[in-house]
Length: 220
Ligand SMILES: C[S@@+](CC[C@H](N)C(=O)[O-])C[C@H]1O[C@@H](n2cnc3c(N)ncnc32)[C@H](O)[C@@H]1O
Image (tube, rainbow, N blue to C red; front, side, top):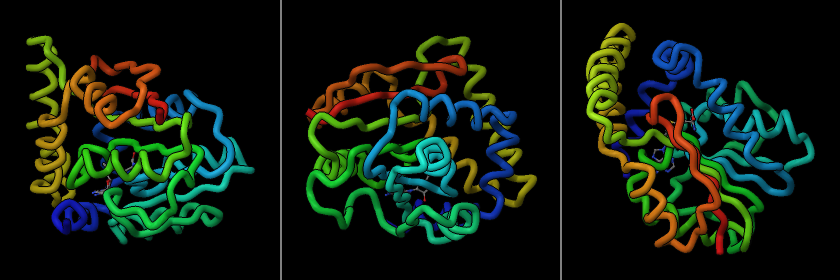
């Protein structure tokens, strides 16, 4: 599984800065809206945690939660650990979690499920470690079928994002990220995948011209 991990190791030092630029600072608002869709308690796992934005927002808002962030990129985790001392950051793939069944009360994953090696294996593992009737919250880019929006989105994905990557010496990595966004599912397709993995999708909502979608799903 090393390929995506290597990409993220290589961009770790510029990841937060480039995120601010390519989302025009909006990713912070998206992330705080994302954690507002549930009331967190107990054990919370943030998968593909990267530099730890989501799990730290949760810990700040719910200090009594027991928070863990997981990511295979040691360099992303190094930055996360510097920022947030009271959260456990652990190096691991979503497809192979070293936790017992029904361990976590919540699982979150923000802009990470599309980067996993196997979405299906990751969902099987998430389902295994999450307690029954508890929530999996996902935020991810999504495909849009509107032709005009598609043209605008493609300009953004294949010119703006790689160009910003280029300015930081990371053209190849940001082109990969754009391709992974472009190849991801539409919200309806992804809801079907969640349902196939025995999650009940209570709600899903797209924003930013349909480019980003939040899914709130319960383990059945
Ligand atoms: C686009 S970043 C998202 C980081 C963070 N969640 C955020 O919202 O800013 C995607 C993250 O997925 C991680 N990743 C890649 N493959 C993974 C896998 N198989 N399991 C878990 N995380 C993975 C990468 O290392 C990277 O940190």
